[in-house]
Amino acid sequence: MEIPIYSRLRKMEPSLATLFLIVVGAVAIIGFFAAVSSPVGDLLGQGSWRLPSTFHGIAATIFVLGLTIALYLAWRMFTGEIRAFRDLKYLAVLTSVLSAFTIAFGNWIYIAYRAPGGPREEILASLPAIHRVFFEFKEYMALFTFPLIVAATFALWSYDKEILKNRHLRAGVAVAIGLAWVYMMIAYVLGAAITKLAPV
Amino acid sequence: MTMATGTEVEANVAPEEEPKLGPGPGLAALLAAMIGLLTMALVNLGTEISKGFGTFVWDVGKAWVPGAAGIGPYSGKETFLLIGWLVSWVVLHFALRSRKDLDVRLWVGIFLVGMLAATLLLWPPIYGAIAEAF
Image (cartoon, rainbow over all chains, first blue to last red; front, side, top):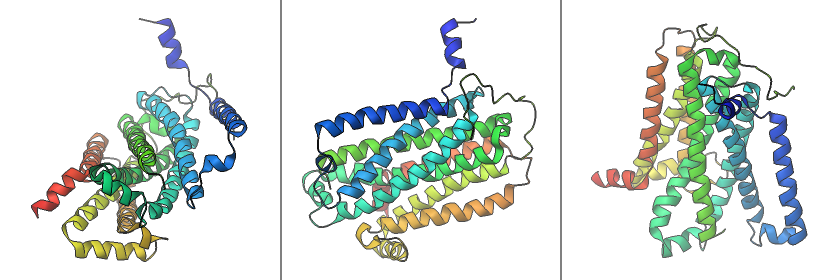
């Protein structure tokens, strides 16, 4: 049975250009209000680790946006109804780079986290279980994203649209992107919680 | 670079046609990612069981990771993840690239089971309990 709105939604897919404009627009609006309401220096913070931690947070946030869009397109690929396949290919490359950036900056601020008098000591003294269970899990889950997205990117570019002919392989690649999204969200949410508990 | 539009139908392929490239390279990429992550999970477990192994893993990280002295054995665990991932990818890629007879469903299933195992092995209460048993 044809359900008009559902059928239309199934056929709709945003183009990369549209998504790009939406992201640029959203960043411009947020940037405008941030710039007029707060000095940039205060936004970055005061500590000596403010720049790497800012880059880590920005890279992670763009990564969340990019991989969430990729997740939607991966679902379309999984069902075999994707139209914007090229968008998924480029998003896979973009999110691979963002994963690498986020991990690299995360490594950098991990030095501050572990340093004497740093957040690790603070959290271990007050909430040892939080460090033991959540932070340690987060630091590994963040690493899971990179090989998974690179593997998906490799498959998408190697097979191109031919991958759609193999139901199980396209499902495997779509699931890899889905898993990467889950691991990214675990790392992102726990990272935000840790920043709230004890910032670097 | 041309952008796809919402009305453009790009992926109009007949499902019964076989792709020109066999499933081997794609499966190799997925399985290698899983092997790298499982390697890291097992190395992490090893560092929990043996302090000597933990020192060795840290030394491996110090050999090349910038700032490894500050981030501890984590640097070595990242190194083993990279080694397990990239070495197995090269090996699997060349072993599977011309195989057209692979049971893709089975291997994707193995990939998923391996991912679940790697995730569970890195959940601190689980690897802590296993390490205590040793």
